[in-house]
Structures are given as C-alpha cells and as structure tokens.
Image (cartoon, rainbow, N blue to C red; front, side):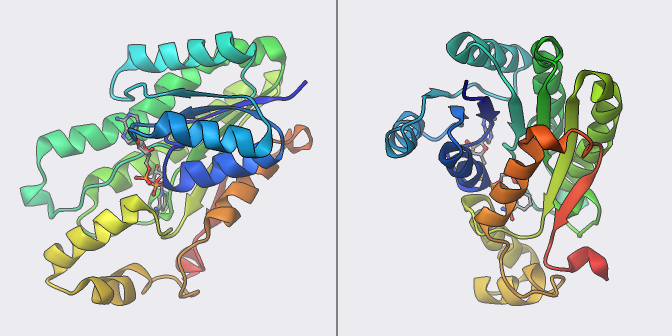
Length: 256
Ligand code: NAD
C-alpha cells in the first residue's frame, strides 16, 4: 500500500518541491495551499508520477478548517502517514511599526496551525502505529534577525513544539522533527527581498548580497531538493529513532 502525505502550502515554493519528491517515491499526496491554480498543480504532478492526489485550499487561520483538512485527507486516502507542516508567511518591519494584525497572522499560520494540524492527526497516527510529523521551521527558529519579531518568535515556537510532540509520540512510533533552512528562492523570499529593500534603503541586488546571504558561509540559496531529500529521509520507516531534533540546512549560517 502506498503511504499518504499531507503537505501544507504545497502549491508553491518549498512545499511544492517537497511534494514533487514524495510523488517520485509513490506517495498519495494531499496538496494544499491558497494558490488559485492549486488543483491544476496537484493534477499535473499526479499525472506525471502516476500517483493519487487530492487538493484542498483550507485556510490555516481557522482551526476548524485545519481539522476538516485532516479529516478530508484520511477519508480520501484511508490513512495519513506523513504530515509536513510547511505553509508559512512573512512580514518584515521594525517592531515599533509592526502591525498587530500581521503579527497575529504570522503566529496563527506559522505556529498555531502546526499545533492544530498535529493535534488533529494524532489519533490516526496512533491507530496506525506510524506517524511522521515534519515541521518546516527556519534558521530563524534558532537565530534572530532584526525586523522579524513575529517570524522569529513563531519559528522558535515550532522547534519547542517539535520536541514536545517527539516525546509524546515516542511510544506510538510517531516521530516529529524540524527542518531549518537558510534562504531558499521562493515567492515568499522574493516578497521579502522587496520588503527588506525598503526597510534597509537598498536595491534588491544589495539585499541579496548584503543582507540575505551575508550570514551564509555558502553564498547560494538553499536548493529545494535538499529540503525535500531531508523530508523523505525523515518520513522513512527506518527513521523511527530520529526524533525531537532540528536539521539545519543553512549554508553554515549558524556554524558561526
Ligand atoms: P511560499 O510563499 O512559496 O509558499 C507558502 C505556502 O503557504 C503557499 O502555498 C500558500 O498558499 C500557503 N499559505 C499561506 N498562508 C496560508 C493560509 N492562511 N492558509 C493556507 N495556506 C496558506 O513560501 P515558501 O518560501 O515555500 O515557504 C514555505 C515554508 O518554509 C514557510 O513555513 C517558510 O517560513 C519556510 N521557510 C522558507 C524559507 C525561504 O527562504 N523561502 C527559509 C526558511 C523557512
């Protein structure tokens, strides 16, 4: 039987990169995201790799929509083996101007949704005696940068939650780990380049060189494939003792 994976925010960026790799491994995939062409993206990946797919545009700002997303995944595929909590947003501003609504949205989507989704899959994963929860945190889950008070708070929170779920899941063969990428060139980062250019009064090229990649020893954006390969490893049956930890793919940023 093919295993089933739900990847939140998988119709764009890192989530889509992860989904394509799970597709190559033959997983059933519940695609998810707010992109208006999400259903077509899911269908195209499904056709290419001859796998079963479905798509949901559940709004992760709402706990009942998240519960419904989990229920829909289980009823569509009959199981849910791997949950990748990937969806996230960003907003960059000095704290004194940081809009409260932006702060609250970042905490809701980047952190609270991880709690609601993990809570909702728990019963099914316990029943299966198998579960793999993979949280896409960030190097900002272990390091700070100015102007990112909401994002850094949420991403640190996700790492704390990862450790708790690892402990609670240990006796049920449910593992929980976090992946912490440095900068990856996705629509989220392209938006940030624009915002940072404004905040730092720089050109976009200067932001990439002097702000984004300045802290990475390896002067490249992290490739999507590296994150996807790590997720595939963490999802394996044999990864049962890999739990409660973070895998930092940051080009040497946090080595300093
Ligand atoms: P992206 O903007 O390309 O994709 C984000 C996805 O989340 C989209 O599919 C979007 O529809 C979905 N989403 C956003 N708000 C939602 C909501 N309210 N309800 C449902 N879905 C929603 O971003 P990305 O760069 O691929 O980021 C993916 C994850 O990786 C995020 O958690 C981000 O914080 C993290 N991350 C990104 C980078 C990077 O450099 N791009 C680095 C480290 C961590």
